[in-house]
Amino acid sequence: MKLEKNNRKLQMNLGKIGLLILFLTLGLTSCKKDDDDDTAVTPPRDRGEQQIIDKDSLIGYLETHYYNSADFEANPNPSISDLIITELANGEEVPDGHTILKDSPKLSIKTVTYASTEYEFYVLKLNQGGGEDMPTFADNVFVTYEGFTLDNEIFDSAVTPITFSLTELIPGWRKVLPDFNTAESFVDAEDGTVNYINKGIGVMFLPSGLGYFSNTQSDIPAYSPIIFKFELLRMFQNDFDGDGIPSYLEDLNGDGEFTVNFENRNDPNDDDTDGDLNPDYADTDDDGDGVLTKDEIEVTTVNKPTRQEVLDTALLTNQVLLNKITKQQNGTYTGTIITFPDTDSDGIPDYLDPK
Image (tube, rainbow, N blue to C red; front, side, top):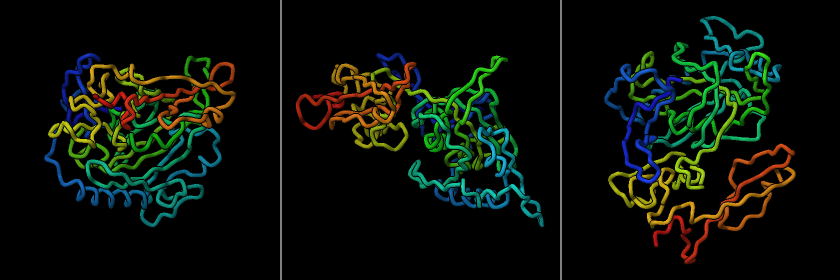
């Protein structure tokens, strides 16, 4: 992808974990670019007003373009290369075996609040994916994709699978990919390539506010709604700071983003417990009490004959079963449980309690 963070970056000293740069996710872009010289910043418009414009543009696209729906209904292992989206010409009827995008039963309307703005976007779910894993907004994904404008001009693509951290992509990717499953299995081909079977396949239709917004990219004007078709092949759970808590659990306010309030270090609604400007996902001592987070939690595993039995494991109120469950070579399943002790019984787990 030309997926790159062109919006707000902050260089921070993350001390013990040796991270030099922390990229904030307020408006991160989606595809990494080959260089930074082709990016210009336009003064931002009001997000709410722009969303109204973008919504109208996206609906117009969905009402005037059709896709080869029958090819997906009959295909047990589809690919994004099979998808053909065509503009409906004046006076033309939709050909047999094709469906107007807006009329497709596979199209869903999604809403999300981002940057204090309610956004509406659209997802064409061509295949859920047969794997057992679903990424969170904080995980790495192994994908192929193609990005194009409402004029059907391709601006980026990856035919060969590539790995990205969803935290480094434009917001739309973090709002869409967690609704899909990874591939069911894969087969090593004789030519050295890998064929993924029953993978998650979809198309996201994004307003500019969940895309590049005011950033002008090469081939993409500012405030452009954009489209990505993608295949989700695999996912990898992230623990960015290595503190034993997967990063998705360190989204304290549960908004699917990592945020820091630089004007108020004691903001209870951001993701920085101790107010040191290092959000918890990048902080090895979340509460700043001098004791590493990994030493204030307990990590255990449970192994069961089936995945469902792992999911059914009885948990205490201060325990969490991680969403990544691993299938072992002997066919059994292993889950990881984190226990959050509260030594002084004040209702705050030790790793978040500076006392």
